[in-house]
Image: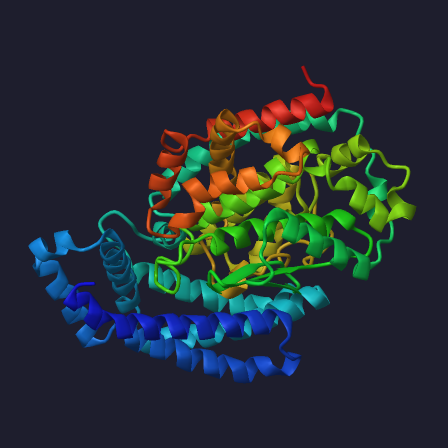
Length: 502
């Protein structure tokens, strides 16, 4: 470790500790915190956020970074990890310094209150409860985007860059048009076909038994519960303090077996990524996913390309039947696999099949562009949401709870995040194609050797954390730059076969 970097370590450790505390409060707020805690906890979050701001913007930190930059010869001799941390801190510092500390604290408090308002609005099916908070969140996002504007980025592009570098509106518009061209015609053909029987998935399934099976499922996939926790929340998510403390949540529905199963597989995909980050990066700014899109690629690959495959269920379907013999005793493996892959254009993103999922993302992406560009009032969003669902999926949400209030993201200020889900699907398909060229995936899964999949992902993705950038990871894992044709091709091949479309 260089002498200059050693001077930086105490500040980095304090930043890590404050970020951990904030993440722990977020976890608690979503899982166990009492209803009346929100207003008071928001104050604590605001204070911790301000302390984190002061830590990163400390004049001594900036001096160390400047000195490090000027000592070019010495810097070249330092280990790559040290240099990567410096690069990441400098980028974070640029973004952090752009926002006045008073606004940063106020925004942190607003987000805490906003999430509580969203929870209440969703429960009461009343968008008007959440709308004033969303209006404030949007105002802050627009303001912060203006602070972070550069010669290359402005407006919505600034927000997108926080989650996925190099994927601007210009790039995403082309990407989504390609998806529309591939998905919509295929969806229309499927909608004319006889639908797959899946009513057995919507019988009553004891929630305690669901919890037992989902715990087994998470461990089967590779989630190490000696270094992880499974809890419940309204909206499933994954968080991590470091690679030895990774936490996931799921949500159980008594009359929807697949809901929790695929939430668990999805979040376990995130979790094994976090647990697989090398120790040398954990508890540093590199101890996280390379990008939101890469993170989503790991969860979506595990949930869909692995978790919805027949081969995945060959070794474990018997256990599921044993858990629910009354409901599944007469359901064959092939019937079950067909059912969990059924295409159903529906209102809920988290319950969407692979084919229609990205259409849900398009709705959110297009509305976010309108919001940040000031082309729509918050009060119009519910109506526009329904109109776009009618256009893309042919359904109209019956109320705001299953419509505009279904996702937590906007209440958290995560505007610009949603496109990462679609990019994650595309990254996953590209990585999966490379995996299949090196491994007989179906044969390994059928033998119960899901470890072969994990090992491939660990080798090319997990171990690096944020040491490598997203495009670098994708290029090294697959041998080529980002190519969404893999995703369109994967969907076309899978669903034409499933529905007998020639």
